[in-house]
Image (spheres, rainbow, N blue to C red):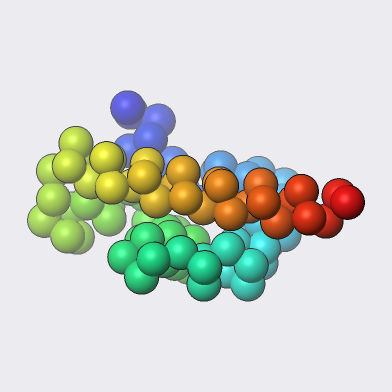
Length: 88
């Protein structure tokens, strides 16, 4: 859980941060439910850690974590669907 709390977007994709930032912002986030899109835009654009985002919301890290991972799972599903379409 410690890594999750301190991970920034740029640290999640070292060396390819701008490529993934562009893909997420243009291709994935707009397809997510509004609450998930907002969370991921904050994470990507403001370079906040999930712990900082939880603090900003006044949420406990545990409560924030469950919402965070649900949104990440939705984003991953969309990303994989798009990748499959490109590989055809």
